[in-house]
Structures are given as structure tokens and as C-alpha cells.
Length: 231
Length: 359
Image 1: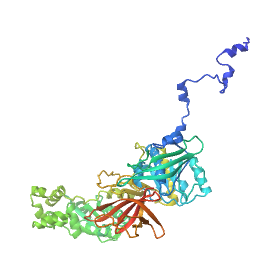
Image 2: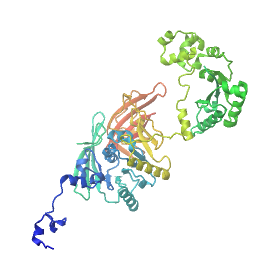
Image 3: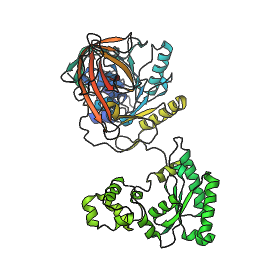
Image 4: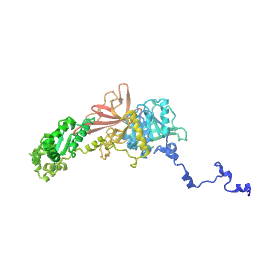
């Protein structure tokens, strides 16, 4: 039986120092192997994408599944249009959306925005059954100020199902819970010619968690073509 | 040409909205199929069966008529009108008149009919002015003479009159067979909503399950899907139907001149709200006959308490649709309130209605 000197082991490529992941001189894996070993459920698949112009303005260029987005505006100043414009890119990629509590949806406007109407379910008068609709995206307009308990139940269910919840809040019906992402419409300005042409919305984007390019942005919603466009 | 027995039940012609007519029709069709397996349902309330086999089996046409009459009375509790003639067109007319046309006499029977039985008012009127009152006199016209005055459908009519075709265009209800199959449960009601490339994914199944759950809780009408159809203004172009009901798959490709262009209101009121427009001196603003406003609107009144200042307006754009039957006259007006809200108003029957909100 032969004893090797310790120094000899340490000089080989497989020294025990390198057994630990935190070791600074751990051999790197080849690139193609890393690509193959990457988990199948990418962080990306937990994100529902947002199209122009919202993509560059929010973290990850999309809405994280299970998160709550609050769109807040004075009544009649574009809150509904903004919430619907968040659906367009996901709808084009085959995700379903539910619109709950919006009484008289303007179907033409929704189609003009680029939402695929075949994959939108409307529940105009939910009468307290908000939390049942489990599409990929869910726009909810609470009828009045939601109670803390009801809001918490809805948020929990949304997180469990991996839905993105978009709350359409007005000053009379504020959302009692903190939002992961919030769009506040602070100003709406119509440009007119011989008809209503386009509306310039000043939107303050905020949120919590990941770094957000917080601040005010101006978007055109609806534009002359009825779409949502960058200014 | 086949000798047919036509069974006409007048009470079934007007379909009841609750679907009872369709159910009665189906029950009667099944009863008649037992008598003669070749029974056809042509329209609601009109059945046809070839008479030759049954008359041999039951022993004479009179016997068949008696049995059929008894069956209809038993099953549908209605007095039917029965008629026998050659070809579907003659058989239906014979049934309406309650006559049995002798074998070989159908030709003369058809030629003696009034021209209006062919169902085209314009052809009948024109021919009567020319002194042609019967189907026979119309049939005697040269094909080329008919073709140079009338269109393709009238030519088909002429062929029916001459006895070359045996049924009128539109005499059969083409959708009835499908509706009966749906009622029997042999065909799924409603077409499936397919995914982006036509396939169904997990998301589609989840959405189906969610819609079912909401329907169970809130009722069948609670979940609604939307589609677009042709029209000029947003409230005409939208259709909202309960989820699961059959959608029309026809896409409208008509140009619709005068269509209101985008942007469209994000809220389109299904039941418009009556409002008032007042000018600066608080007089009512009305639409004049020539399509102008009487004054510049300054205030919008929802009720006596709720009034809003109007800072800008565009239009009105008058719209006269289907003046030949409906004569629906409307005008649309876009207004901008001092608070920044934009609204779409409609003027109809001397009032202003709030039709949409650019929310």
C-alpha cells in the first residue's frame, strides 16, 4: 500500500477545494451544457408579455403571473382603455382574458386595440363572484370600494392560479391592497380636428420590488387607428 | 316526377320563441317517419312524403290521408291541410288548398295557378300589367324574353312554371335539418372556439372550465362573448351573445360607406341614457331637419342636478339607414366635457341619447 503525499493531490485538477460551489476557482461548465441544463420553466414563461409602448416601461417587459396590477384613473379618463391595452400582446399570443364587472364593453374599441375577441370572456354583472374567472389575464372593475377580505381572497386565488390581475380602480373604488405594478393616469388630453383624433395620457408607473423606471410617461391611447402607441 | 303528399300545419309557420314549435315539429316528424320512412321536413310546419309506397301498403290514397290526418291530430293536436300532387311546388300549393290532384293533372293544375303563388311580387305585378295572370301564361313566354327583362331568380321561377324544376328557390329551410339534429342531441350546439393556429391548448380548457364555473354560479347568461358584424356606428357593430351559443362565422367584408372611424368609445351603452343639450342661454339644442344643430351646445344635462360644461363638439353626422323599410334617422355627435371626458351622443326621435363613453 502506497501513501501519496498530500501535496500531490492538491496539485491535481480535482482538489477537494473545488468540490464546493462557492469555491472561486471552480471549473466552468461548457456553454452548450449550461443551455441544456437550464430549467425548462424559464422565468420568461411566468411573464405575460406587454407590447408597445408598455414593454420598455415596465420590468421584464411584461406582467408577472400571479401579480396584481392596479390601473387608477378618474372615471372617463381612459382607465378602461389602458387596462384593455395591457391585454393586446398576450391576446395575440393565444392567452385568454376575462373582463369582469365592465357593464357595456365597447367591442369595437377592444377589437381596434388589437385584442382577439375570440379569447375574451366578459362577465358584465358578476354579483360578488369576481374571483371565479380564471383566465390568464383578468380585468376586474370592483363595483365599489372592495373590502380588505374580498380583495385578499381574490389576490390569493390569482397567485395560486398564476393569473395576472388587473384592477380598474377609480377614486370611489380604491384597491385596498398594495399593487405589484400600478398605472396612474394623471392627465388626459384629447387632440381634435373635425372629430376626436387621439388622446394623450400622462401615466405614472409605479410599483414595488424590482427596479422600475418610475416616472411619468405620455402614451397615445386611443390613437387615430384606435390603438395604443408611444408618443 | 314523384307524386308527393304534402302535410301543411299552419300553426307551425310562426315559430314560438320558447322552442316549443321546433319540439312539436320534431315529434310530428318522428311519428310520420314511422308511417313512411321517407318523410322529409321541408320547413317548419311542412312535411312531404312520397305517396306511392304508402298508398299501396295501406290500400289507397284516401286511406293514407285518413291515417296521416289522425296521426297529426294525435301528436300535434292540430288540424293539418293535406294535398297530393307531383313535385314539391305543386304539392305544397295543393296542400294549402287542401286538394288531391289526380295523377297526370298536376301540369294543368300548375298552369291554372295565379302567378302570385310563385312568390315573387315584382314578377307577378309586371306580368299582370302585361296581361299574364296565370302560371301557364308566364310559362308560355319565351325564355329569352324573360331573361332580358328579369334576373336569374326569375329565370329559375320560369323553369318552375314550365315544369322543368319542381321546387322554388327558398322553399326548403336549409337550416332546419341541422336544428333538428341539435335538438335530438346528435350535433353539438355552438361551434368551438379554436386556438390561434386552430388547435386547442391548456389555456383554452382552463378558460372553458372557468366559464362553466361562473355560469353555474350566476346563470347561463352571465358569461358573454363578443364579436363584430357589419355596421356604421359602434353600437351597431358589436354583438354580445352568451358564451356557448352558436356564433355566426361569416365575416363582414362589406365596405360600409360612412362608417365611423376609430377611435371608438371603450364603453358602448347597450341601453342609451336620455340626456339634454343646452346652449349658453339654457335653450334646448336640437337637430334640425337639414342635419345642423340649432345652437352651439354649452351644457350637457343628465338630470336636473347633474350638468356638465361642454367645451368642444364635432358633428353631427346624420345617418339615414334603410329608408325603404325602416327609415331609421339618427345623427351622432362627439362632445368633450370640461373634465376631459369625451362622449358620443346620438340624436334619435327628437332626443339626445348618451351612446358611448371614450373611457
